[in-house]
Length: 600
Image 1 (tube, rainbow, N blue to C red):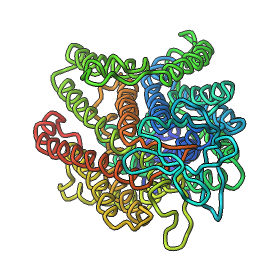
Image 2 (tube, rainbow, N blue to C red):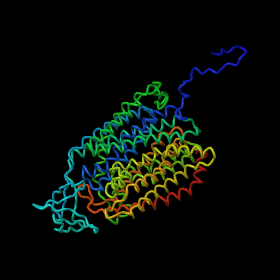
Image 3 (spheres, rainbow, N blue to C red):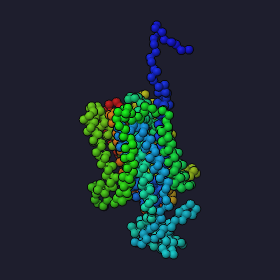
Image 4 (cartoon, helix red, strand yellow):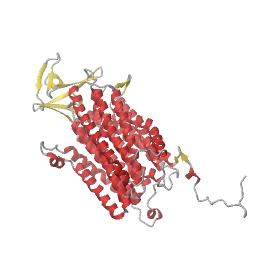
């Protein structure tokens, strides 16, 4: 029965202009969060599936040494997070977040498909005292051995603790001992397939710039200013990221091992296409979110979308040249100090550090001039946290480089009898995030109701301390290794458990922090600066991983004790830096909280 209002009864408000679906919720959040959650889940399925393979692909398929592989990996991940600075701005001013996300998803999918064409594996060789020899690889009962072919002889390669290399005859006798520095291993690679690899990485880097900041901006648009659900909404969204990576970091490495590298990369591409389809065919469910600026939508301002897409494609060969420059960069001259180190940086390194050092003070100067005193202080607090964010991700992002190589070389490849490959170990982080994200979301909400929720600076400080404790836990595990110099897999899993808790203290909270502290008209640009800080961290993470470089032959180390000692030394240093800086940030939390003017 419908009550009809009369002159004597109060009239109901006119709600015919309101979309009834706008009031629907998904786990207490705007229903659109479900689609954005799923879109991000499939995009991360593709990205993390590819990332799980990349360092191993570079060292095993292309036979790059550790220094070259981790440097290229760091440069790639750095560009992946640099491009959002531009992509966020273009979406704010011209495209709208929704169109930017669709274009980025499509370009990344093509990039992953291009990676499927890696060509034949590189041919390893060794230069012994200036003479080049072929290196043969044999596998017996799952154990690989590498031999130098010297005429009719096949001499097995064995690394020694002092850095020298012994060449052993079939009976185990030493035929020759090569002094440290006189045995150089490398691989003969096809220039064409290296170019294919770099073009694919360039496509993914450009595409991610359009996708990454703008999907997060759309999530922020779902919540009004002051909505206390925002932090938990971003935490749920962050769980989608890791739900996608959980599946891909198991399946892509498995396919790469069982079928070939191309199959692992192909599955990543399929995941990326799913992500694109969810936005392209959204059935109007995202209407009103991520739309172009009002003038463009109304037709009063020229739509420059096609020109922007064309310019983005021009960016692919530019990025290709940056990768080439990175691979050809010479190491700094010993004793040249900090100035020599900066001078030796690749063009990409100079670009990253230069952009960060200009953009952070530049935005602060603009906010001081254009904003109120309160807005400036909030932006200043955001920039301090952004700077500490660089440190966190520099240390955390050893996962895809030095920790993956550690898993390949100095970790037993099973957990409670279940085989786990080196590429699959990155799934631990995703598994713990998916498991713990609802708990952390509930925890923050419960503490907030009681007025006990830690401030954002405190969460950042705890995250830094946590990443240091994770590395200390793994170092502790190395004290129990046997004669094979390999730790049990559960020690590495424990590191990822601690790191996952630390990550949940900083990453979803960081995304939410940017949307709350930023001046409204530059929120997309600020989201880009957030990812720029991660970009700088990724590049530096590649440099840090280079300190853990171990001499290899055909992609494998020849002395596991030397390998273990090298990783332990680097991981101890990482833990000390993280814990000290985490404590410093905890001490700074009070003035930062004051500058944030009640933002939680």
